[in-house]
Each structure stands twice: as structure tokens, then as C-alpha cells.
Length: 185
Image (tube, rainbow, N blue to C red; front, side, top):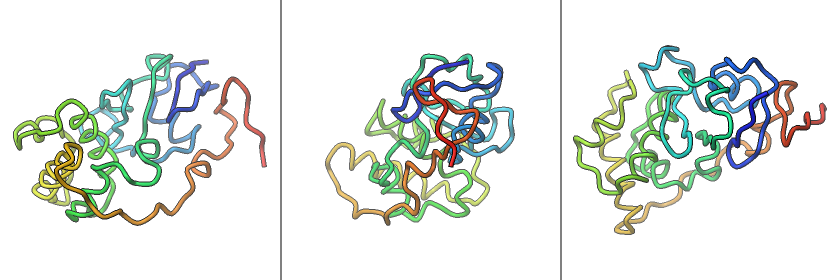
């Protein structure tokens, strides 16, 4: 049973070790921000941070994630205060929202490495597919978030999230916290 830290919580997944991390997060941990898009690593909708690196969770098994630190969109900033989240809202860079969590995760990883990326660096780092056509606004949002990270700009707060982070990780049989199955309601 693979152990890892998900959104700063140690967990033990009581699942087949070859289960893709995406399905462990969505089905066992009820963390549904990472989306199933293509299943072959092309679209980026399932992006999560693994030890700070943006990876497609459909391509990583929970055995490969063992002992690592996983951050999902729910754990990036539960109050939506992360500069990328703020800038995505402020720049109206969100359309349908399906690809938004993956793009946000990829942008957060980029800004952690380089808080002043060029347009070319953003395009290279954000390999996510977004059929809504918001890519020009996404670039502007990521550049704006970089200015926030560098403390050159501030953004008014985005609306409060509609769900308590603790509620997002409801008790499910396959998830174990600190090696103990959560209490069932």
C-alpha cells in the first residue's frame, strides 16, 4: 500500500500500486480538481505537483509516487490566494474551467522556478490543451502572477471557495490517513 503526502497530509492508499495517481486522488481521496482528459499525458488536465514538479497524474502510478509530496489544485491554496489563481480570475482567463486546474498547477511550478518568465517560456511550460481559446489571457495571467510573486503588483482577492477543504476529502474506503481508515459517516 503506497504511502505519500497529499496536500500536506500523510496518506496510505489501499489500492493496487499500479493505479494511476489520478484515479487514487479522484476516486479514493475525493480530490477531483485534477481532471481526466485524454489518459495518455497529452492534455495536461490531470496535472499535479509531485515534489514541486508539474506532472501528469494519469502517467504516474501510486507506486511511483510513494514517499513523495503531492500537491493538487485543492492543496495549492485552499483559499484561492495563490498568485496564479488570483491572476486567472482577474484576467478572466477561465472559460469552461475543465483545463484550469492543470494549467494553474503548471503555471505555479513555472513561477516557482522563474518568477519572470517570457511569453516563450510560458508557452513551453504550459503544454496543456485549452480548446476555449483563452491562451492569450492565460499568458497575461501568468505574467501578472509573476509580478505578484516578485511583489511588483497586488490583486484583489478572488471569491471564497464554495467548499471547505476538509469536506473535499470525504471518508472513502480506499484512503487511509496515517495508516488508519477514516471513520465512515
